Image (tube, rainbow over all chains, first blue to last red; front, side, top):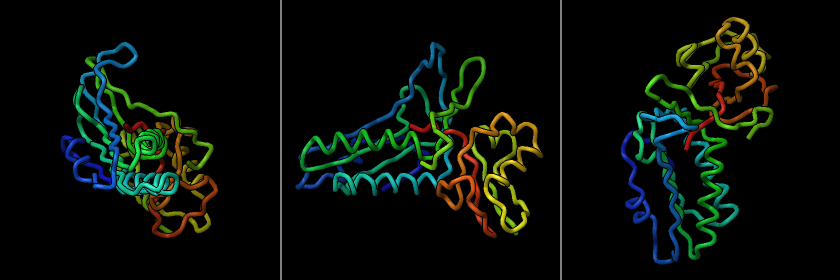
Length: 142
Length: 80
């Protein structure tokens, strides 16, 4: 259901795996590596995860989605290691009988992932590299 | 007591991925972090910029540590 993986991600296969006859909508989100950031050319990204905790936090997001929208189909996969420009770093797939819930749950999940799932990216440029820091507020327990 | 400390991203670049640290009973996660920052100058830029996790869950800074806990100090996450 929730995985940290090394391989190329395939959102279409994932969507086909989870859709059932009861579903009327599949919402998918694919995060892809942008070739520039703040005006600088990015060569590739290196992702690192705290895998055990990342899976636990993604599972928590799944529980929250189930609680709010009653949807149990969600899948999340996030890559680690080198991810090239244009490649997919994260996919989220959620199905539901009607589209509104699928859209809402999918957006909620990526926003939440960016706050509580312990994964970090390092941007590699032509002339150096830097760990990207997200906007986590450390004063609170997320 | 002994705890395992795991570090990631910029912190791992400084300290390496894993440490075992001997601590007095009753130590909080924040006390452990302050001790590590005091012992390693290169951690000081991160002093106020980490979240605390114990056994794969976020915890408040005053969480008490127990023997064999897995403690992690997490820079602001940037997945996605």
